Image 1 (tube, rainbow, N blue to C red):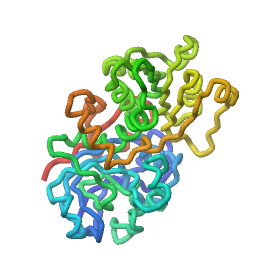
Image 2: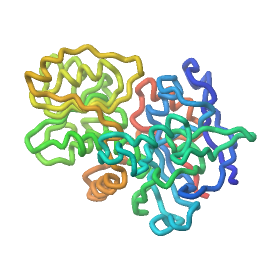
Image 3: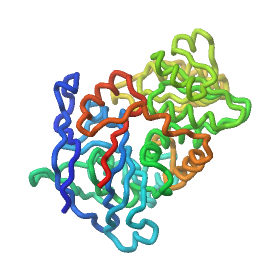
Image 4: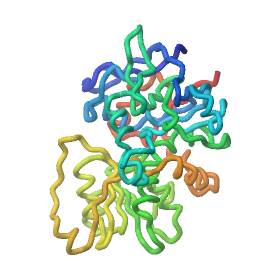
Length: 373
């Protein structure tokens, strides 16, 4: 057993500001050694994402207490099964992946199109892929968040929840590869796949949306349009290289159209905007996770008469072991500056304030850095 420090959500739906209600406590916990098929990782960096906020505010109901955090990177410190050492050595840097793939179910056979059935069930239950819980506080179980629980000094995860990366990939880049880049960038690579001469529009410029913008900019002769309500987000997108930027109203009023439109907000109005911006023959790809009771209003005629498609993409329809090396190669070539997504670096103790910043739309990616031993 290892004594660790982590950010535990004790109650869901606390009033804002979270800096005052403080639903998340940074506490001491006990972490079991990894079992068979599991890995212990010392966390180096973790990103704060809307999927964390959605548990805090109650849009995604999960069991509590729960150690939050699903976008992280770190160093392997122990493996539970000696056979895992064949491809995962002690000291290896790894990217954490928030949807483990069992590799055997019908969903896994779709090559990323459909989320793994066993992985999804474990995430909902707050367990690791094998069904176990490795965290405790004062002798009582603490649930895992999306099989990662990366807001901590150390974590134990299933082997399927990590992807090794070369050591020259710094922690702040490796962490963001596991969620923001896989989700936003993966939607461009795996679903949008724009061709020369086409336009990609991204609606919503948080970490996932900005990652989609960066990935679309790696394509030759593809025009990239960025859409958001906030002027500072539009300015940031222009700084990354977006060719055009608009508020949603400006884009709709200006009859902006794109062959590939990525919706990265998780709000009905954003999805309706994305659909309105989709050109005939184009694809609207939604990666945002709205509340379960959210609804949109649209006319289905355009999908038939104009040959348009509406596609849901979870985790960028990615196979992490296949796609993370692709993103690493793009980063190493200088074409995918992942580190530019980091809007601020914070301490673990600032996690409640970070949730306020995220809820107010003031952050692209806040990164928690952990001290080296």
